[in-house]
Image (cartoon, rainbow, N blue to C red; front, side):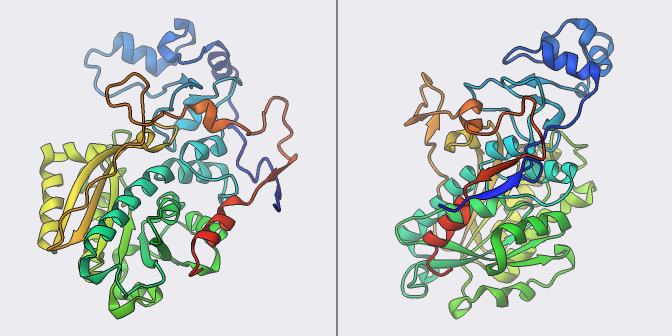
Length: 401
């Protein structure tokens, strides 16, 4: 098999630089330990204030630190873990490539932009394994119910066109492309994303077969992107997307709908109302459930019902579906009425010894990082070989491509 030869820097396998005090903390951390496990003289000032001096203890310390346990999944990957997650063995923060492994990106998936942009792209992504599991539950529903005639003779090739909104770096899109049930697969036709670096990442990895629209979704007419989908009888099988979650995230300021980003969920639903796909998948943070004491969640569910969809709202953990990460995300899975709602996917992985343990044990960080070059005394301009697995796999599984 042909291999790509690229530098460690282009491969995004470079940790961020740290100062002497931070390096002392990293050197002192043992596997599974956090900031509070260090000698107090090594604590960050904000951490000391939070633990010892803050009379209210509202919020959390500004600096958290944890050395990952190779036997267990990581905590949630975000754009801020690159000064938080410490490598299980080496005395450094993890790299974007290691975080990309935790998010389910293959090694030949390359990211465009400066280091901080790549960190943000990886941190904001949906774990591919989780997206695949959700998409396969949609395909199982299609096989059983054939809503709107979908799955009969309308798409006899088995390739079902789909549109991606708020695509980011493509983690959710990659998961959808990897999903398969019998002969049925979803073929990604269009990605809509505003961030330029994300769009360049999508172009670099998905190529000319996918139409990349670099535009603000709130200024778009949904009809503009429908022509790219080559739908039969104007039937669009699937729309996916993860509207920005910073307005609801526990790591953000949690302004909800007062933050303009909090209104983008309703922009996604505007597209659903106009495009009328048979199915949609919308992802967001688990904290959305608690915004305004659940009023926002109820408003979203009422809106979905009003525009003609039966939908389930499911809190799913990526580790339950084969990702090496305890990332919990809220998934809305909708199907056009009167078809019955789509059931969420059953877990395939679990904690050994737990009563909910299914077939396979959780994937640990050590297994996820296996095979990556060690960075001890690494020359960041050195070349490494990467197998181009993703493109060949997608081309093989998508005959319409």
